[in-house]
Length: 221
Image (cartoon, rainbow, N blue to C red; front, side, top):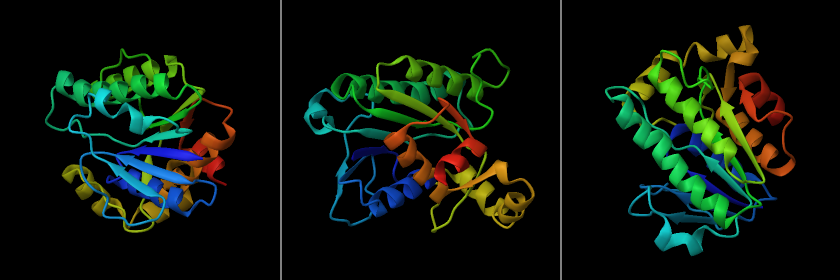
């Protein structure tokens, strides 16, 4: 398998990258993002396009992939809905529309979040935007597309968010996550489980197109 990872420097993306590099069935892992990962590995390639909304000049480097794990995201804190939609919906769709044309046999996995609003009509702006993004991705002509909606995420190997509010929130919640995982196993997934589950659905599919935390954990087993 050849895999693309968008957002490999974020907390989720770091975990997904680690699992992809460890998986013997994945031959090539190519990251796409603004910043280098700092990871050195024989099967890792890194691509830093100047504009994450435009891919025409690098299409040759985006062909021939079996899976895309889209972990790129931004906090809605301090953003208007229009700006949040531009960086969330706009960037995801620019990449996905290009990839669905270049790799029609690809499986596309998008990391969304618990509480995403599939109706696109709820009161919470970020949930509406995420729902709009999910719905648009599911309409694209990929071989398959899956939306991952984790709730609590437990870092297992030092992965950390690049977004300051998220980093603070995860730091404060870190002592509670193992306890919450024991009390309510379906509400917390680890970065290992996220990576393994993404690889699993890319390889063999899943019974649902939208996977909540409990579904992600089942796929990771």
